[in-house]
Image (tube, rainbow, N blue to C red; front, side, top):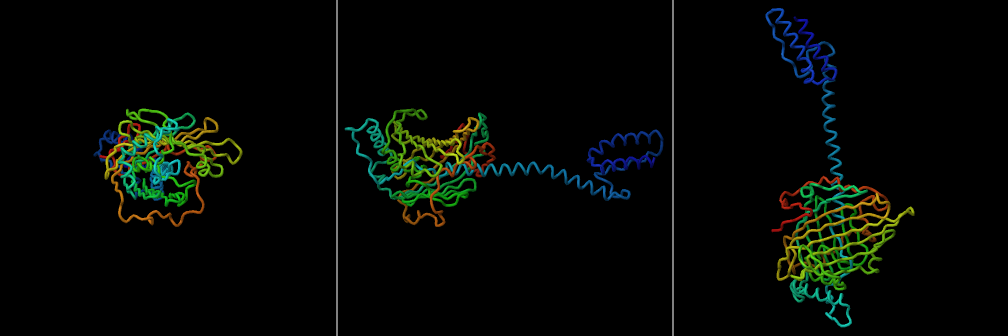
Length: 458
């Protein structure tokens, strides 16, 4: 009987030492234990009970058991490492994808500029229908109505400076290449929350600070130079003439918006969210396009459309598109980048007598084409914003607040630097479809996804 019992535990220890897990060893040994117990009953002995099974090898085993115990520890550590390796790799990939997504989102939507230079101090052209094309005179009339609906020319001209603070949420929603579309099905939950502060001062000075997902973008203009600072490029000047910030045109600065469309034409009507609107079209002039181009990157066109409500006279929608051609350094086909931004401007409310839009949303499309059809890519991003605070003629604001940073790099940087890395001269896949972005501010959970980000500002 002692021999059988000793043989049973020896077999168990041998199986564990060979790499078999204790649980499996106990299952395999269960049948052996049953056979031993049956043999004891048949023998009719006193029925000495079997000792309880141990969770691991017996430390009191025969010579050589120490080596076996070490082998068991190595097996356990190996299993733990195998279990942790996939999780670590997935976390690293998610972190890299999130950083790439943030760079793309902030680079394209953070602080884009308007198509042309604007001087809001200059009065709008006098409304005239004599010897003036009907498209131009209609546009002048629409802009006069817009200024009147926004608070009036006199009140708007009395504003010397302005301040606005708000919050944003940004997300990459879709990536398409080679006919294959990958959608971010958790876009609302993965949208990056952030906040921004915008300061403006006449003439033509502005400064914005935007922080999203732990990254911060600064941009500004002192009336002579437009600059931007990003974590990946540092401080650099923008090419081309001084231009206003596009975000300010989205219902925050009616006078600058009206001056922007002073040279526009009325091209027709269209419904926007069920509301009849007049459409004004503005094209950047060739001289401005040449000034914004650099080296192998050429800005071919930049067009801005403004949709003005026939009911309220206010600007309710903006759409601008600019096309860039990048010549190959190896003599191959040129690559084209088309960037389209559609902005819906909503929730107009009076602030000190001036109508200010307190919320809105934008949809951005980056389309790359020009080579083989399978190399074409299309990336879609969305942003929702709300305005929390607005003030005019803030005491103490001076020109010193708009001085460019001292570490600004010499020379200027082309707009193409914000295109996805690796895409300027060769085919590569954007990482947007791998977005693993987590919502960092639970206080902003009022975003509901329905094809576009919606931000409740009430």
